[in-house]
Length: 278
Image (cartoon, rainbow, N blue to C red; front, side, top):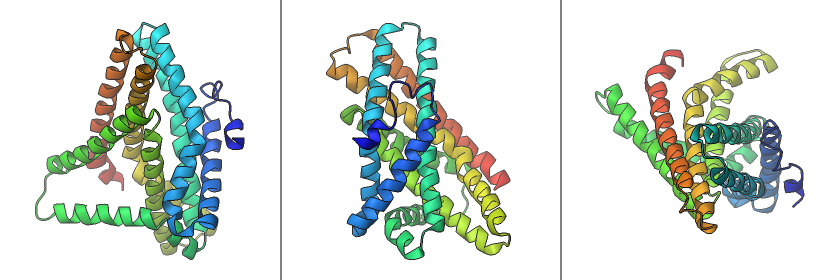
């Protein structure tokens, strides 16, 4: 593929910032093609096009991480290597999110409503469920429990998708990027309409909106990537018949435990820290 050839999967760990460009470019192209060719299903088709574009580089990367499990026996060294992958995956996520936020804010309203209708419906559905649950007095512990359970479900699907499809978690994460971008873009439009200041106003509102969702969101996304990496490593190990290697199982288990710890941290920040500032 032409898009695949733009970025070298064997050097990307050394230049993780390139994945921001990759995510941004893949998203803009996917959005344009899906809207022009299949307008009615553009919202979900663009997710699939992004996934298709990112699959080769992600598969090569996860395959390399599984091979490291066989070469490196010290778990601390392995986790350090995995951190490099998580960094470039976060750049990929931020590139996709940025592209969608800019598209949501600056594209014509009719096009935005068509492309991001599924994402808007998903946000509305979540808000309705939250409002239905949060009636009467609710403690922060109760709220934390609900947030943790919801995040745990996403974490589970990231693990299962990656286990079954190797790099399947990228679909869930790309979808989440589009939903988060829709929420941020909508907040940017609302806040910008309330203030005056042109480009400066948009920039300050964009920073506020980004921090509002990503203060805790970054921990959630990293947790999902960690779980996806664990599932991908197990998937490739099964294909290559390397599951008898204890190092593979230990590494995957450590990654799952780390992802669980991260969603706990994310829930604490969302319930107790984010409301203090936003």
